[in-house]
Amino acid sequence: MSEKVATPLYLKIALDIASRIARGEFKENTKIYGRSIMSSEYGVSPETIRRSLKLLSDMNVVEVKQSSGAVVLSRKNAQEYINRFKGRENAKTLHQQLKNLVEKQSKLSKEITHVSNMITRFSVKWSHSNPLKNFEVEVGKGSPVVGKSINELNFWHATGATIVAIRRNNEIILSPGPYAVLAENDTIIFIGDQAAVNAVTMFVNP
Image 1: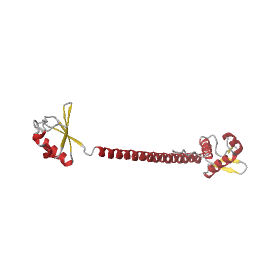
Image 2 (image 1 turned 120 degrees about the horizontal axis):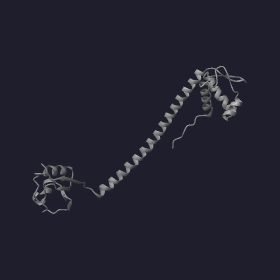
Image 3 (image 1 turned 45 degrees about the vertical axis):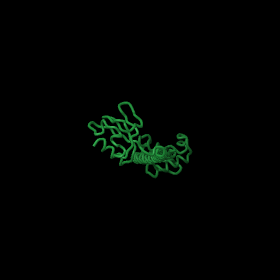
Image 4 (image 1 turned 180 degrees about the horizontal axis):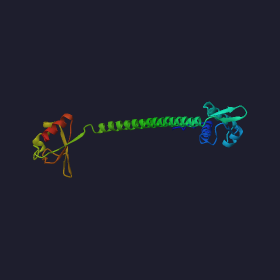
């Protein structure tokens, strides 16, 4: 579960004070209210206001005077502080987004692994119950097998494949006998190895 990183309160207040200076609400070379008044205004402790003003002082936005509050030094520096803060917040947001994406990717990887394992297990079960895969080939126009029976073609000896069914139009003929006659457009369903598949293809449609 992703965590949201909260911005410390003194940073938010410092940003708000800088914004008020940048807007011209607090003029350059004028005194900002004392810490006790500002703590009441923002609903925080005087210590939080002190940390906010100290931060702005380090950025030359205000000058903190002992026991007499703070004086606004530079509107330009206030705007630069705002720009820096926004850049920092954007970077922090991107880091958080990256963290969230990594968490999602990790979860997705686990799901992919789980599904892959399930497919493997089902495939093993299928191969145990169906050791030979069915293949199909359609009897094309002019095929040499048209009109001939399976026995006449000596199909198994010629290809190594065993015919298990013939699909004709909408009908499926299961386990056709040796005298079943093949017709054009029939689909021969058979079992065998890869060599048999190649042999059937060449035998039916050379």
